[in-house]
Amino acid sequence: MSTETQDGDDLEERVSNFLRRNFPQIQMHGGSAAIQELDRENGEVTIALGGACSGCGISPMTIQAIKSRMVKEIPEIETVNAHTGMDGDDGGGGMEPSFPGETVDDGEPDEGPEAPF
Image (tube, rainbow, N blue to C red; front, side, top):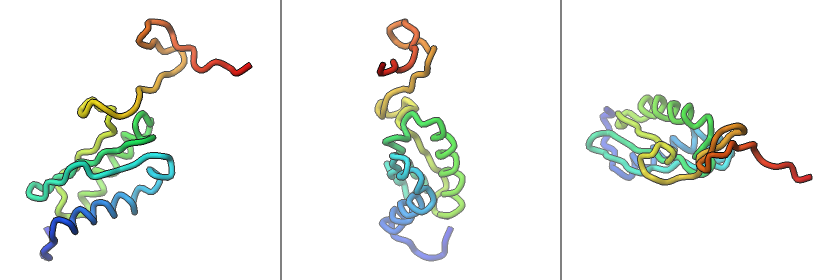
């Protein structure tokens, strides 16, 4: 822990700055990252990734990078929880991606998008 006294707003600002500074590609690709909850007493933060992050194939790697780097850069943070809303823990956030040949809810195989001609 830092020997300097940091107020709660400063901690929230440092977490926000960490996300902006370390993960500009999230915004560049149409996604977003926001602090959902910050427990200063336990050193725990919950980050919600939204927008294009929901359903993105590399979002698990982004989440892992956030978790490992934030605890190293911000000593007051001991635990990072991050999710895209697709984890089923908050009931929201985007649609499940479907892929050609995959069976969808109606039981019919999904042949992918139709050609416009």
